Length: 321
Image 1 (cartoon, rainbow, N blue to C red):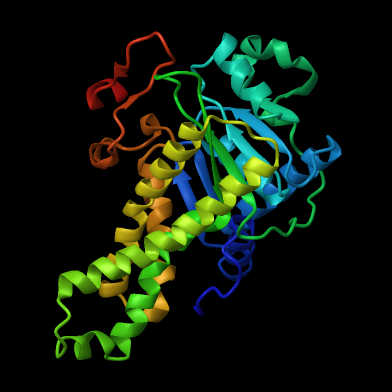
Image 2 (cartoon, rainbow, N blue to C red):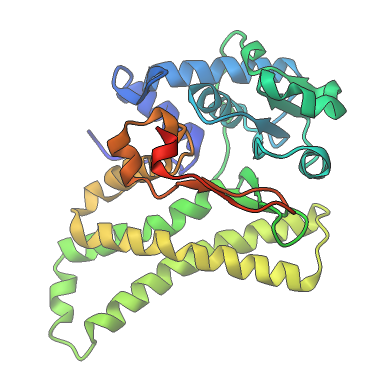
């Protein structure tokens, strides 16, 4: 399979995979499975329903859904429509819930049926995920610098704050390893052994380069936010930016590792699926309870964060069975 050559935009990547790998399984769980083509089709139907609700590209759509295939369809549908997902912790209620939905200026609020009683304050924009089906629509083109989702913090040290992530921010740091793979294939890495440059310094420069790519994306996001009316104290801007930048180190290191390990033409082909697997093991798409006991043992997520004022609850692997 030839390497993906388009923009690093989530919906564009899914569309490409649906065209080239349509019948291959995208994800499997105890609730069923979806191929690439099926997921793209479901996303297009959800996007059609969102368009009928008046959702435009760039609009915020809040979601309060348990992990699973339904959430996966809704998330990709939001992305397919060019909108911005605002995931809400399913434990939130009252002022915590209102702060996120109102603060994000969500134009729609997609809530699981058993959680509707908490969201009556937003009845005008409240929708059931089962109702989000309509004729499929074409994907809304987006750019790498466009906002993908807003992830709010747990609110353990104050009011929850929204962290913005654009399509290119995460990919920018991870793809830094592709450059390393190209240099290795050309013999440049071997040539460097004849110079006074130490290997540690070479690796450090590559990590710094990847981190710089991620920093550019973060600065652009924060700048757009400032000009769009976001108001934060100077120290909050600074600390939030530093935290987002330092957290990108994980992806920079991962991309560098892939660059040293794989041929240049295969780096991003492998990095993409690996990131998807890590997301699944982290409980992003599929709840841990739906995974097999063996897979749960390999997952690093065994608990969840509670809202302000309550003690964090730890869940052991045994209780997840």
